Length: 224
Image 1: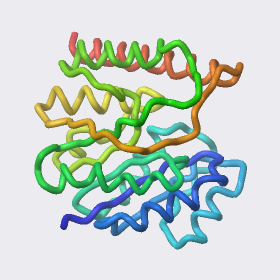
Image 2 (image 1 turned 135 degrees about the horizontal axis):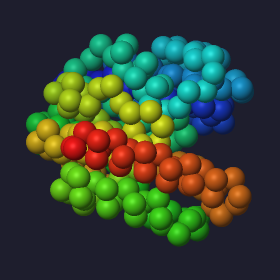
Image 3 (image 1 turned 90 degrees about the horizontal axis):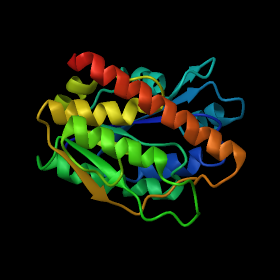
Image 4 (image 1 turned 180 degrees about the vertical axis):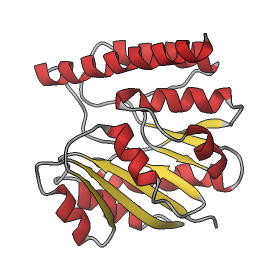
């Protein structure tokens, strides 16, 4: 079986990081785990180090795209997996994403999550992401914002370096589709911390919306 490097960007995830790492360690084929602590103010980095995995510490928070880029530079296995730090025990579902890439059925897999239990926003962010990917990538996805992905080296070479900010997943998907790579969504039972309808939650979605617009602008510049 092809071996996998797993990159886990983390920001203030001391409540979930250990459980996430333990679940990933149990996945067959995983030979390298890299946690990138993106300027956390809590004990995320130390807890990750205590599990024995590789940890990259960033002094100041610089965003998910930057964390992924730094982590991926250290990957030394044939396949590369990207997962969020707050998956907890459900990170074990990573095995479902690995299988199609190992067997050559896909160049990159994306995790689709079960329907959220918590009532969130009104769907503007996800809707915009879907429209952008459908227009510029030609494929409709159920989980356009999912950060849980596995890719082969061909896909990685086409996508690296990753974009900054919350547009990282959308731009990666569009680049992969435009390169003619096979992108496959996989149903999983993964779950993470869900956003609700608090002021901070709406601020977070507003930031996502803004970054998607920036990603759209970058795409249009590349095509002009």
